[in-house]
Length: 320
Image 1 (tube, rainbow, N blue to C red):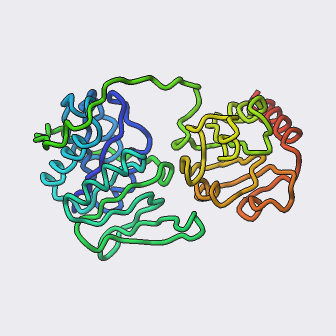
Image 2: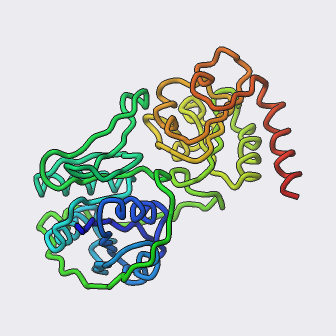
Image 3: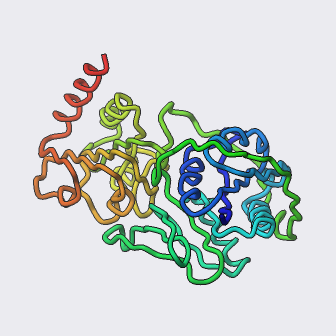
């Protein structure tokens, strides 16, 4: 069976959930070979093997932390040359998409970004994507070279499938460009205790109808009752009510959770583009004609200041 190269997203050896989802998808089209880079790379092997990696290539060179992107592309190209895979899968983060695009240029192959599903096809892997601000769903395949595909988080289940997980050191020769952009400082992100927005199984968002930064406490309370991440529409972010890092939409982050709850969000196309692939969508809006209701699975026509506290209380009561 052909091998499929999977780029591992990890933090000091702790493998992030989107990578485990990639392993599930990779097993549909071949045998997963994982590539883990940087500090803690070797420590990823056990988890990767548990989820289907037949082989784990590692390199812990300091360049991956000290410089931006290019060293990781050099390593992925070295792994590609060593494995000759049927496809290369990368998590669909901002960095992941840049790495995938640079690799595709180097190896002369086509690239597909933000796939939401992946299946085996007679002429190569077939990827499902949302197009034109998520108004259409398309199926695509790469017709030239080895497919390089980035996959959105929450696109596949995490399914354990124990495999050998043989660890092999990867020899990487860094290009002249690898040391072109150096990281000179880092500022740790403040932890809210909530899941990462792009990886969360549940997202609770607020929009213009929240009517002020102080009222986002209602949104946060509902999110915390569900163990969810907090999102915001562009209108709320532009008004300074919530950080830009939490913006969901075409110019913010794209999410695809199991459950998306939109509160006081009208449903402009810009916002829909960032959340329309959510599995179940619930909206609370006092305007019965709001465009968001054309999209939802369940809608509540009502004032969020009445509905959200009651919903939060009911959830907490049932949990108790």
